[in-house]
Length: 189
Image 1 (spheres, rainbow, N blue to C red):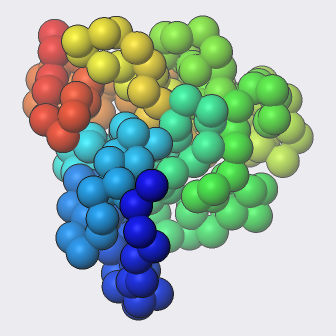
Image 2: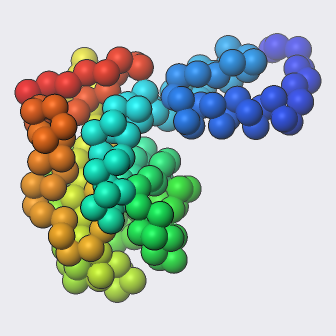
């Protein structure tokens, strides 16, 4: 067992902020903690790529994109500020769980459950608070194992089309699937 380490709360908060804004970066944190953070949030390695592909476009279109882990816990929700605030009112916010078991039929939870991309529109959501929303989500897989690492979701009003997530990626780089792997930026056809 390691000897107790005293690290200031400020240093730890700064390291956490760096991790969520620049995944993979955990300066001034013990290796034990850095390794644990990377294991518990594997989609973090792809967040810069998701921001590049979806961030500005989602904000410009009045949508948000979200990244969740394999349990459906929303790790990041970014995009249009007004839409983020609308989402927060129905608990579509960082830290909320949107698995099917916890939130009923919804794009991130259903994509995780089925293991393939889905679209859920307005009244198809189990929760009536989400009936004004349409969402498209796709699992994020480890390219070496095929294991699901999490899910990426594009949510907003009724303008989210069945191919919205794929089309946004296609428009950005002309590829059809995004797959993160241990910090690498990997795209596959």
